[in-house]
Image (cartoon, rainbow, N blue to C red):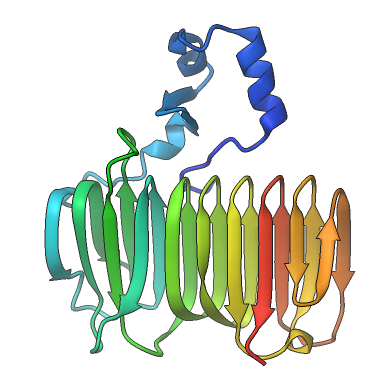
Length: 248
């Protein structure tokens, strides 16, 4: 089961909850495994992404190196803040932030884990900067956003997965093997290396919209585009928007 913060995206479902109970009575939601956090509803089980074995940072965090060990994969879990991925200028990975409520960054088994969450007073600005080596190709990179904004800069990996609840993700990507974009109620806007014909596509849309270069998918639809490229991009949209352009 994925551990990332999962925003409940469906307005229909939220309408049922609003009409069926007094929203000031949060006990009913907690009993059903849900909790209201600044008008955003999260799964309680998914909020516990922090690992008690590693330090949890708060306040202003000066730039610090995450690990001296080799890193093959990277996993980012964030919500309620602005998260930027930048060039480190060397071969190391660093983290820093301002007005941090909870931040955790560590390496285990060749995977760099970054958890950054602000689950109260979302109007206050919390900013996290993750620095990675320029041009580094990870085996797998996963970005899980509950609410907020992520600028992934330029990210290269064999497999890239982007999951958005009610926030926005943008940047440049180079998935050398494949990519999965899952957008519930937010927005994903990416530019991929190469051209449209360099990938195969599986696009599923429920009530949102997806744009793959010059081709648009709206309403309830599911379509597979086979370019015989061997690299597949999967796009799954609930009521959000995904825009995927190409560098060539």
